[in-house]
Length: 149
Image 1 (cartoon, rainbow, N blue to C red):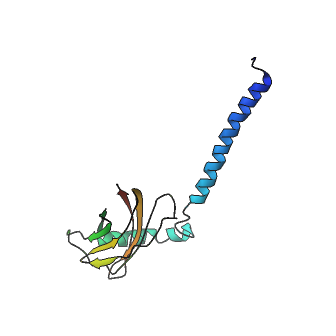
Image 2: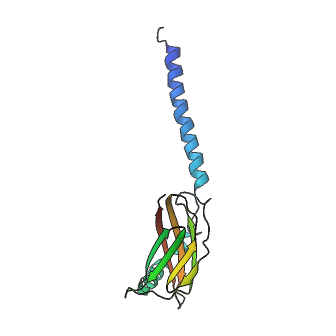
């Protein structure tokens, strides 16, 4: 069977067709899984960023998070290494790549440590949290968790 111009065109068109189809599929999946914006107006948020960062750093808090046997633990400690008092905690636990698995754990608090029962599939998870100090200072942090099976 000789290789004709028509066969070369069909092979080339088929190869480009597969590439274009894969690119369109990946673009649709990327746009569909985009979790959205962090803030509505980045310029407005930037106006208080340095002050907010300085206030948060002045707290001197360190946060450790862990998941073990279906229990999520978030512990807050101060510069001294002892637990600190946290007025409130708002947290969303979800995947880094999409928001369909996002949920708010039902935390209980005791001595600087928040615990919540969770059922997490293996993989990478993010905790996006805002803890409030007794003086009203917000402490924002994103914590990466890696859950193994």
